[in-house]
Amino acid sequence: MPNKDDANAKDAGERDEDVVLSRDASAQTTEDILAAAVTGLKPVPDLDEKVEANECIEPNKDINDIQAEPYALPSAFAWNIVDVDDAEELKDLYTLLQENYVEDGDAMFRFHYQPEFLKWALQSPGWKRDWHVGVRVVKSGKLVGFISANPGKLRVYDQTIPIVDVNFLCVHKKLRHKRLAPVLIREITRRVNLAGIFQAVYTAGVLLPKPVATCRYWHRSLNPKKLIDVGFSHLTRHMKMQTTVKLYKLPEQPQTKGYRRILPQDMAKAHKLLEEFLKKFSLCPVFNEEEFIHWFTPLDGVVDCYVVVDEEDNLTDMVSYYCLPSSIMHHSVHKTLNAAYSFYNVSTKTPVLQLVTDALISARNAKMDVYNALELMDNKEFLTPLKFGIGDGNLHYYMFNWRCPTMKSEDVALILM
Image 1 (cartoon, rainbow, N blue to C red):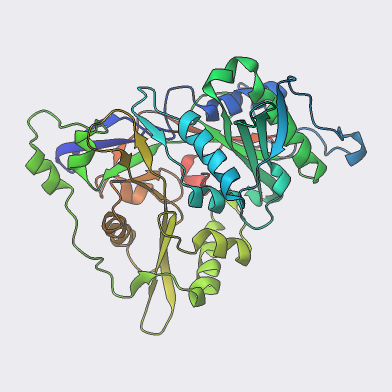
Image 2 (cartoon, rainbow, N blue to C red):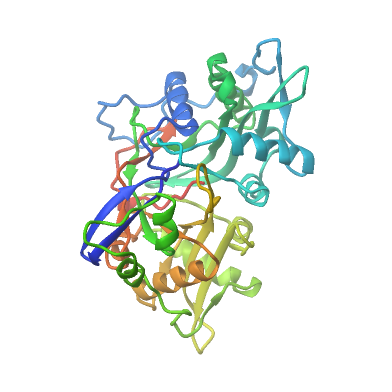
């Protein structure tokens, strides 16, 4: 998952990118281990396969043909359902991820999933308790492995299918030789299959058989001095700190009339706005209203959503981002890098540059240091004009037990955590 970059430049059109952390990292991450292990399980298309159909690879299994008992673990370990509503168990998961989850190739930054973020990401509507799969040491009870699956619906071209997003695969660093990751993946697959779901979607930085689409992250400085101080980005030749700070300076407050944080009474209109917007893409989630409310209700330090409402009370635009800090591994002053990630944006009346600029201002005012965006949906329209710098690696989208023609990044409208 990690690596996050930023750029500093003489002007908006001339930038020297230096990616340090973001989901497009070249280092092998637990996300990449997930992808590699899933590929080993099959069924996925071959890398050189020319796919023209849009269909499942293997037919759905009869429930009676699915293994009823959990897969065997080495005798020192035991399966455990991690109860994220229990403060101690949530702390165990937080600690496992904090100490062992994704970091960039230089080990400078590591994703820091706060407990509130984990509950938001793991408890969307329809979530199942036994899909929060842990592995504990029998003697000590220590949590040393985890994997989760989140249910939803996905539209792939003209077909809508039930699916899970497999995420948060993590194995303690000292136990990676035990090959727990493939067993975790087989076990979550078994549990999901028992619920009648046979397709999954996941992302990784490594190229494996066979991506549905490939995107890049872009990064926009909000606090350039801090980003340079911690080694996230650097001053380019002939650039001084004062000039760089000026280059990325934003207005104090959002400029669009009617721009405000989303309210409960906005949810139905905003849901309909997003639903209509997503129709033009080839890979996108299908949110019902309950799911929309979950994902877009502002939660301090986790997710934020803003709308534009005109004088006739018409909701015309929305912009959203989620917050995911990273721990700074070796710095005497700064310990946390606060990153905002562009979520879903819909512009029907407000120009997209103006709308996203207001989101940048909102994120900066919420103490975010950098604003990240994938080059999917309509995002390419604002990336270069708003001084985003391109990342140096790719984020590949994969599907398990589904084949479809490869699509361009701008045809993708799916954001995974």
